[in-house]
Image: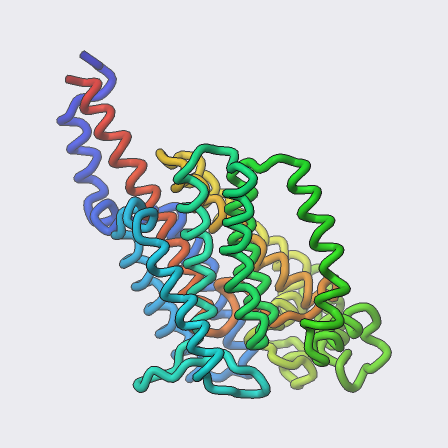
Length: 385
């Protein structure tokens, strides 16, 4: 008999956390998310030009996203592993529907009209891709064999090309990355990884001449030298860098950012909200934001490492790394070290679809953590008796 803990003590421990345990909510992760979202509302109020209605809409979207997160946290991870391919296949069908019947706006065909509203199916793949790849890889032994690896690369490539054709290069990169992280975490051979990097480098000229649209090529050229067209294509990044640099160490203060308040900075409440934040709160505010992000990221990794199955570990790790990649891409493009690809800053930028997708991923992680706790309690009960 194990004298470390009794069933009675286990029941008392569970009663002390009844509501959270019933909803499968991880309190440390939830705390980090709430702090980030509170910071988002503070910055958004300034970035929107003191637009109170926009603030209310963001609160409503945040509440909806948290509702989705809690709902997904109730789903046992084994159901994702078993039926993830059905959701993935459904998303592919929706992407094909966009290709043939989609609605266009601002030169892009990304939306599908379903009667009561329009949906953007590519957003669903941010959630569905890592589930599909994690389930496909974990079904067989690790590391994956060569032909199994090729099959998973095809699963990543097909939706990525469909999304890039819309065109939506930013989402295509994020979807592909989420799948590649899952493949990487499966423990592929380093020679295959090097070969993959070489293949990507070799694919760049093909993408430049045959896949990229003119405006996408212009973004790359602007990234390399934004000063060549300061009043046109380079305007966004130049104003963003001015805003970030003018913040200094302590920033200009909340609601006192000249670039955003005087409308020099384009899209200040969405893609370029980090520039607004940096101008008003400076290097100190940036450090605080990074601490919050790193706390969330490492909590997600911690949950992933404790997972009981290969599928859950790969899926949790892929979601965690993808979240960090979102942050890297947005801050990189706003500060001028990456081309502008239209990626919002996670949990901070104004928006609904991206917020729901990100919170859905956190819901999966909370579900994994709840399952881990249940398995540990079950094992302890078995050891006790």
